[in-house]
Structures are given as C-alpha cells and as structure tokens.
Length: 471
Image (cartoon, rainbow, N blue to C red; front, side):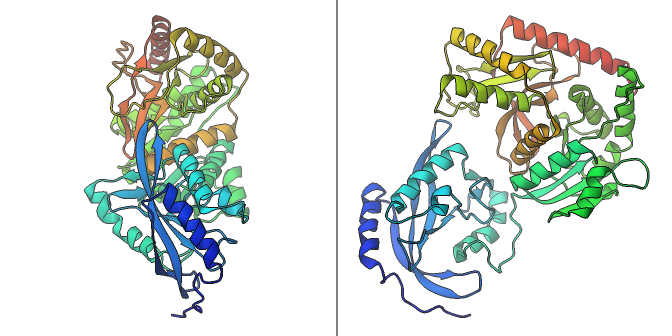
C-alpha cells in the first residue's frame, strides 16, 4: 500500500494550534492524536485526528454524539473530513447530511473558507443539523453484532469512498408495485432519500407492454433500481409500497372499489408469500378501504399493513403551525390530522399529560390558542391538493422511518378498532409509532367530542362500503 509523503500538519502548525486551544476551551472532552488515514486510492498518511462527543438536544432529551474529525495538511484552509464514531450499541441513521458509512456532509464544509470557517463553527452547525435529525440510534444486542463490520470500516476511516465493500444493515430493499405516475414518484422519492440499498419497480400492468413509468426507467435507468414483472422479485423487501389503482369513469364508485380489490387480489397474496416479514405500505385510493383489503388479502398481522393515511396532511399542518407561530423548537409531534382522507379528516393535538415513553416533551400551546391555530391551518390545507409527487415524498418519508427503524410517530391508516369507541374493523389515520415491523403503538391524543364524532362517522361510512365489497 502506497504511503503519501509525511508533511504532517507542520505547514500551518501555528494556526492549527491556536484553533485547537479554542476547541478544547469550549469542548474539553475532545482528544487529538496523530493517526493513519486511508484515502480512497488506498494510499495512507499520518494526519491529526480529533475525537470527542458533541452535546445536543433532540425532542427534549440530551445526547452526546461521538464524532471523529481529520485535519488535512492544508488545514485551516481546507475543511476537515468528518465522521460519526458510533459505539457497538449504536447504528448510523442515513439522512440528508449522513451517508451509510457515517461520513458527515454539511453546507458548512462545502462553503469552508479560512478564516471565517473554524472547527468550532463546524461543531456548532453539527449540533444544529443533528437536532433536526438524530444521526445515531440505539440497537439491540443482535443488531449490535451486525454492526461490527460497519464499525470496522469506520475505524479504518476512509474519505467515504473506500475499496472496502459493505452493505449497511440499516439500508434495506424496497419494492414499489405499480407502473403509473404515482409509482414512479414514490420510486424516485425513495431513491433520493437514500434509505434503500435496492429498489424494485414491480410492473403489474395488463398485457406484455410495461407501463409508462416502467418503460421510461428502461430508457433512463437509475442505479440500484430493478424493473420487473415477476412478483417473486419482491422477495426480501423490508417495505412493499402498493400504488395500484383501477379507476374508470364508466363505473360507479362501488364498481371502482371492487375493481381495485380485484386487482389487489391478483397481487397481494403472492407478495405476502414472497415477503412474509415485510411491511405493506398502501398508497392506493381510497386508502382506508384499500388498506383494509390489503390486510385481508395478505393474511398479515394488522401491524404489518399501513396506509399512507394523513401523513402528508399532518406534515403540512405542522409546517403551517410553525409558520404561524414562528416556532423555533421541534414541534413535530404537536399536531396531527387524523381520520379519513377528504372531508372526514380532523386535527388533534398531542397529550401533554401522557406518560408514554415515546411521547416527546415538545411545546404544547394553550387549548384556546390550539383551536385558533387549528382553524387557520385547516383553512390553508383546504387549498392544497395531493399530486403524485407530493404523495411520493410522503411515501418516502414513511419508508425511511420503517426501513431504518427510526421509531417515529406518523399519522397513518391503521386498524382503528377500539379507538374513539370504534367497534368495527376499519383502517383510519391515527398517530402511530412506526418501526421496522410496522406499527409499534398508538401515540396519545387529546380527544374532544367533535373529533370523536367525526372519526366515528368516518368509521361507519368506511365499514358500510367494505361490507358491499367482495374481498
């Protein structure tokens, strides 16, 4: 293995020493040493490394995130190379600023310019970005064993494009069933999110010709994306996204629903056979009834079958609330849109008195203020449609949570029997804690009479339609 000339950090030693003093004054837990760094071409060099933990808050909890920074010979005129340094009980959460090998990418690094840019400033931006999306998560003992290969890789510390080939355990396989605009939007959004190591577009359109989306992917192929008409190609998927629809203007509404169910009957049992441990994420419309149909046709536990529900509306709702209140704190779990997509949806707020360990300690506004915010936000939401690309982004959001076992709360279509005094087996959108196995639990909500009445009416309407279908 070739070794690069050892100029070390002597070139700008005085500048670096002064910067180290600032780092240790603010972050005294950091340690520095000279270690061997392996570049992507296989060559090695002794570089100054800084390792330590940076303190941050996420959803009201304190965390110390372990990081490792490498200073190049040209420092401080060139940015450091930055990595997470997880312990054996931690796993890297791939995100906007983190890749599967723990390499950290931030705008601060891309715009590095001495003397304006400093390591202290870099750490401060890390804290800001990590508080938006926690970069690590805890793993079980069994999962920890699978982390050893990744930790070994990170210990060698390359610049993120090493010759060492590994498949991170937290990037799985996702299959999207369908060939239309919605399927393609979901596929592209999931691909851009980076949470799946492999993507399959399962084209179930009639006839020998592929659907338009599948055909375009043949013309403009995407890395790690396979286009197939063979249902067995879904085998091993962590998540299977169902987008199939059979809409026709010539049919009654009930006839359209039955056509959708018939189309699912030819697909779902086979998918369930090939993917017995996958989570089925339903985006077919109407999502409440189609999620129920997928559940019945798959034979899965109801927790493995999730509809996209009001995830998009909930995200928009919280975004509008944050804009109205100019909130700086994380308000991700404050408000939810629940119930039935369309006119039957209502807004609810988190239960501040809940002892649920998954309930974050986010700010909750006074009840009267909540009502005012809700009314204004719902008015804004009325003017927003759900186009294929926006639904695709929502599907990618849900897929990312499930594949990476983020255990986040989303408002999704889940079995609502027993909630809001609902007695029938219907799927309605409720705030659910999602993970690798699907629905882990239901988040607590402050329930009022109006919300309960609306959701119960939706449950009755959905159940009546289900009773008229042959599933």
